[in-house]
Image (cartoon, rainbow, N blue to C red; front, side, top):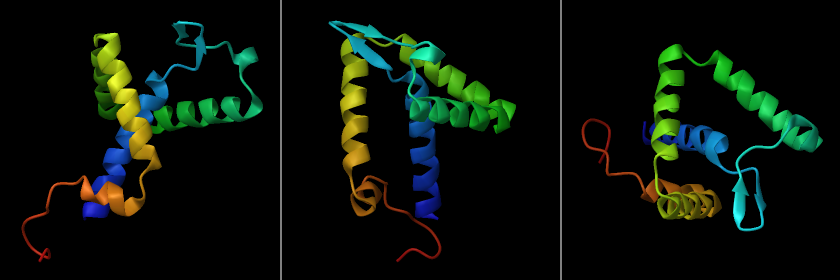
Length: 111
């Protein structure tokens, strides 16, 4: 159960941040999007896969991600940078390290 919950958390974070992370840095100014023609074939494939995943999501999930994105847009740049650093650190963690971030599970089957 904890692994399923972790998977859901990771999927939510990854999906939201994939949409939110800047595609490139242009000097001191962040570029939040690139034209399709500027993407590498691997980036195009990832973008298409993300879009396909988005279209298959239930509408309620799409709306939840939209709200998360709007919340992200309203954040201060320093807070966005802190979240990016945390996400980068999370991506570098082993599955065991990630599991340690989950709160202890109570109830049946957990001893």
